[in-house]
Amino acid sequence: MQKKSPISICLFPAAGYGTRFLPATKAMPKEMLPVLTKPLIQYGVEEAMSAGMNTMAIVTGRGKRAIEDHFDVSYELEHQIQGTAKEKQLADIRHLIDKCTFSYTRQIEMKGLGHAILTGETLIGNQPFSVILADDLCVNDEEGVLSQMVALYKTYQCSIVAIEEIDPSQTDKYGVIAGDEIEPGIYRVSTMVEKPSPEDAPSNLAIIGRYILTPDIFEILRHTKPGKGGEIQITDALMEQAREGKVIAYTFRGKRYDCGSVDGYVKATVELYEKDKQNLKS
Ligand code: UTP
Image (cartoon, rainbow, N blue to C red; front, side, top):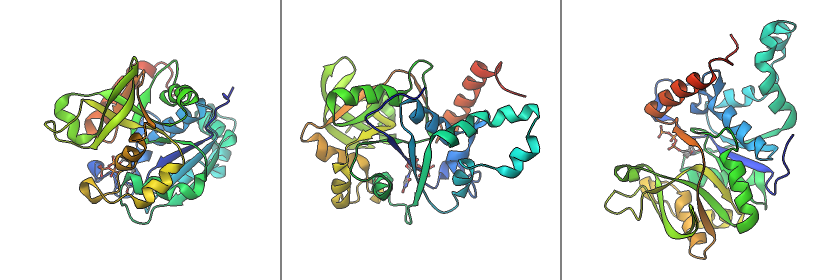
């Protein structure tokens, strides 16, 4: 059964080029790379749905049409396998299509994650929303990361970022936060820096691809100047909310695989295979 949630919509920025996976991502979106038999973005949609969300807003770009086709009925294919054992393999995706609404908009120029989120405003309007970066695959058998964050949102009613402790040498790959620990593993953010070098990092607490954002973020993003790498960074916009004490960082329970990197992707595939091989439908 779907849970009731104060947040009904999940945004998936999925317009990036996925250059670390070239040539695989030349004509195919990174979000469609499969871990076992499911594309990354389907794991994300399942996580959002189990957190009580039923509207999936996807920011796409050129060459990403496979995502739209994936979350649609394939009459020809379904007709072909009707009545065979293979029908079961489409049951999960069919369930998602039946229960959720999918809407899309295109980011015309890839000006960064902050810009991608701003592009999604037209699909969201004036309400709090969640964000999943599908290439961060998060696994928790009891409660998905987004569900954990929704529970926290009910208490704090402000923007929330999921964080994890990383090796200090890796800070230049992440947004890094610092703040007061107000409950075990929960921080009120006072500083955030995008991809700092280890010497400049305020901590080793890195933001991963799960956010809950309040809609005032759009107004902030509209005037956020390009930052690190010449891109409009969500971290810079969040810093404006953080100055008013309105950003919480949450050390999530579960395991994250960085499937935007080849190492993380292979690790996810191997570990999920070990866990799920009994259930894989052949
Ligand atoms: P990444 O930097 O991890 O993704 O962006 P990328 O650019 O696709 O990958 P590489 O580094 O070239 O291999 C994080 C997320 O933000 C989205 C990406 O799709 C990814 O989900 N994104 C990034 C956008 O939607 N638009 C952008 O302009 C940039």
